Length: 63
Image 1 (spheres, rainbow, N blue to C red):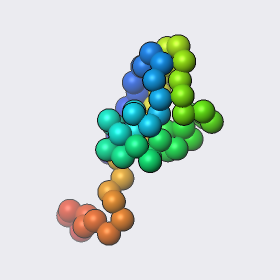
Image 2: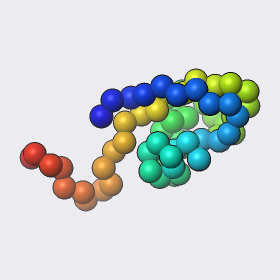
Image 3: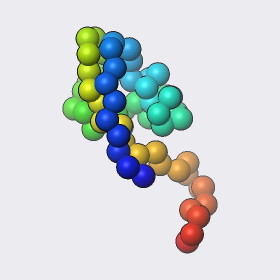
């Protein structure tokens, strides 16, 4: 569960959240971590991607 940093050219946080977190609705977590308010990106942007979180009700392995 490590954070990662990516660099993108334009795009939007919906697509990035879907690709990296498996859920486009998690775009707000990326926005908050990077202090962004607009999900649409312009130019070259480096983003910190938060770790994925298991869905509600999912069993945690090893506990």
